[in-house]
Structures are given as C-alpha cells and as structure tokens.
Image (cartoon, rainbow, N blue to C red; front, side, top):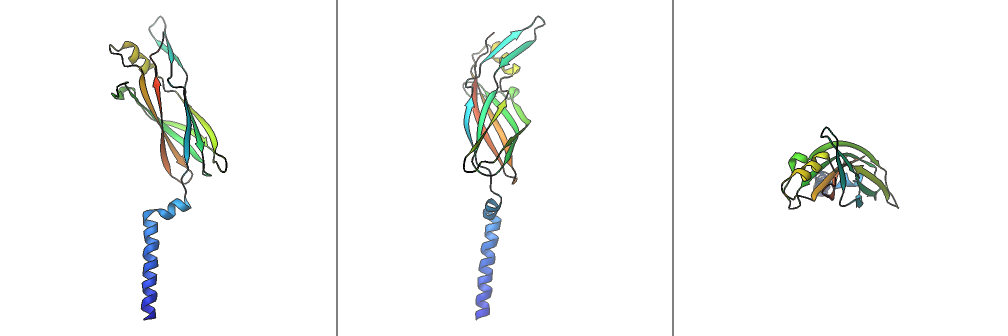
Length: 172
C-alpha cells in the first residue's frame, strides 16, 4: 500500500511540475521580462517647414519625435526596430505613407531600485506626409502617427510599445 501511495505522490508531483513547465510559469521566473514605461512623447503636435527650390524639390525641416523610456527592472534590453502608421484626423489609414520595420538599435540599460531613463528619437514627419497635406484637395490635417517600437530583452522576451503624435499642416 505504501508503494502505491509513493507512486501516486510521484505522479501528482510530476504532473504539477509538467503543468508549470507547459504553461510557462517557471520560464517567467527564470527568464523575467523587462518592464518598460513611456514617460514622455514630445513634441505633440509636430510642426514642419517646407521649402521648394527652383527645380521643384521639396526640403523639410521638422523636429524628431522624442520618446523617453523608463526601464523599471534589472533586465537590459534593446529597441531593435520601429514602424510608423499614419491616418487622417478622422481615422482613415494612409498605408502609402507607412514606414514598416525600420532597423533601430538603442540599448536600454537595466533599472533597479531606481528606474533608468533613455530617450529614443525618430523622424516621423516625412516629405511624403508634407506633400500629401499640402496637395490634398481635402483638409486632412492634422495627420495622426502611431510609432510602434519593438523591444527585445536579454532573456529573449519581445514587447511592443506604441507612441502617438500628430503632424500639423506644414508651413511654407
């Protein structure tokens, strides 16, 4: 009877351990994910100045989008890419302006007792966006931009953080 009881306990413990491994509970304990918060997104809205030379080429002057990340855990990570999706002020997507999976490499040092802040700057206001707002027969300004940052930590965990801003109609 005692050997049957031992086998029963062994099977129960083995089943529980297998369940923990299958559901990934132990993995998050052994390989914790980074905890990141966005503390600021500036400027909002982004303004731009457009100049046209004699040949008709457009040049654009605009501030980059500056996003401050706060790492709150002791897990280092990197921003590995970003994407920008645009839409009109009424929410119509503008896929022809989209910037997808742009390589980006920014190290986010681990936090600890005190969170560590790092700033990422990306160009969101493009010549194509300015041209569309200037040449469109409709008033589509301001455009809304969603910037998605893909972050990978040293434990192989991947997360996406989104920043939102608006693009004002450019001045000439």
